Image (tube, rainbow, N blue to C red; front, top):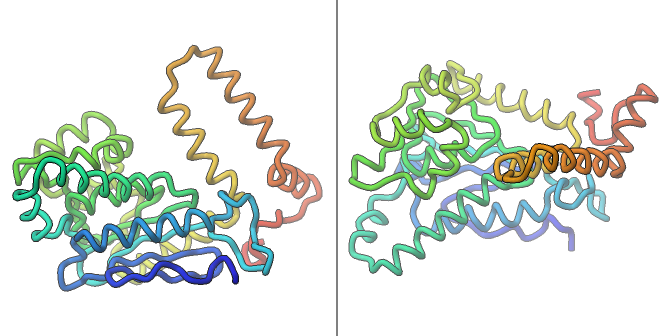
Length: 288
């Protein structure tokens, strides 16, 4: 059996693998792709399945059958809107749940957002319409975000008398302290131009066709980069985020990190290809 066989069965999301790129599409357009319990669990399952099949996690480009491991994950939403946040029925049920039940629901959400944020592939969000509450959380967990001109984002939880706590660490890391605090209190929708200004998104385009083109351009760019370097860049960043030691210890840690990467199979291939004036083995021929 090939490693890419038997992906998780899903109802509310679509998963399509194209070579080393996996495209995950939220597919509840009639509900504006609102997150219900089933969809959340499906996304978690797909994120875990694809993580184990990533080139960075496997430290290889292909499996024993020559099938490409995954290097890029593209997240999008079917229909007019990317994701309107939590499903209203799930929110209603939360009001009747016990504290223990609400805690379990929060733990499930944490697995969702952390699974996307820590995913070993380079993650791209392609968004349109609204990305509210948990939808904004999904956006914040991705490495690169391109949005249509009609995109509106909001940390809308305060409108319901609650807080964006579970998504908070990821939005905070993306926006910084002052913007996160303001948007969590304000809870109103951010227009696309402000979203670009404060770093909620990296690129805004006019049309859906331009959205697809912008995503493909970033996919092509990422595929010129070593997949293990992409994965370990996240580990490096997390190390900086959590560093509590001395500056001297940090410098030593970065020296160790660099030495390990230079001595790795990927590092040796990258340096050799540069000296030999050829493309590294991870770079697609059409990008050579």
